[in-house]
Length: 305
Length: 117
Image 1 (cartoon, each protein chain N blue to C red):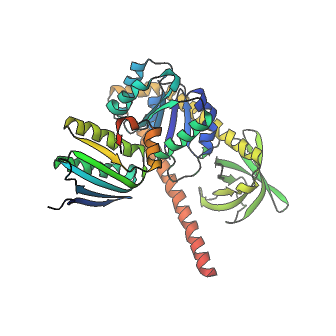
Image 2: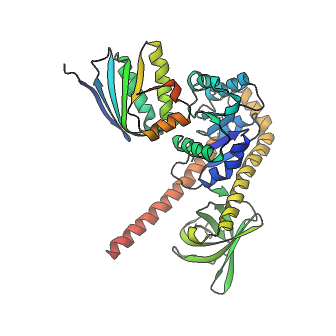
Image 3: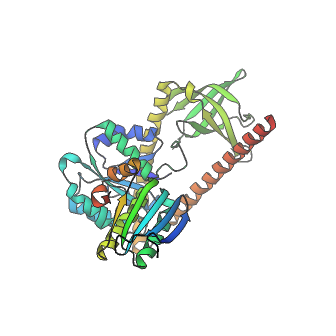
């Protein structure tokens, strides 16, 4: 899944941001163009939409865009431009689309949320932003927990990540094992203090340490109350925001190191490669689990036939 | 030589490309695109088109009635192609583009730079 960064987004984009996340996009709002290089260096093949109506002058935005495209460390970024249609900046489209060669379009925004949303979804599809995944997952933090009743006891655990379709989690009690296919009624999620109720099914599990198992629980979409779904979505939007803030803090801490690297002509920090490998390994784990699950389903079906 | 001599027939991931000579046009080719142009095959398509241009075909008509998807990366190939052909006094047009594919060009504001028939 490609990350989509909206740099200085227009209010209308902020208004539909939640819908973009609901649609399964890994989207972020960034309110500082000076730090965007940091993200683009770290997350290759990202998509960047720039609002050219704010902060910099037209010529400066052109230069800024060119620099991102030409820089070795950020050259894999796909760039698109957004501008308020009423500002009549269409004369810049040739410069961006043909001279600089951005591929994600020159979008003139009109004040119509429904139409903008349609355009955004078309753009997301054209940018192949969602990849294989249908839902974006938010990494959870400390204190994001869940509990459910199992037999006559309440079981507690920690949520590792969550999407609108399910979550991965760890049980606090290592002696307890959940069986694949097991339905957990009335799971109480506690996400940054907000409580939501869901029903879920144990989809798969994998060992993360000798004793601990990471479970993937698929939510029963029919049983999530609208309020619960909205709570999860709000939480996810908040986490996307936290993600940017966290990276900013890290960026500030690493700034001196990065400056040194720049001087040495080595802007690409190894950390990005490590992160990439880590993400890749996680994907491989997930795919392996999913393949196992598919194999089991096929076996079951064959047996029933 | 027949009027529609086949110059090229290629199957790349998700996309089939057939190129016939277009005798109605000097250095002309009709290129039939069938399938989808996405991140995975865009570069391959660009290589194929570069080779055709190198062989002297600079007036291209893309028949797109069976082209059912184009990504932004795919559109990028055609903006590059536009620059290349302009320098060579060549041109290209899109013909019979499906509505959903056209709407991608339109949403991204590329329609005004290309010719659609």
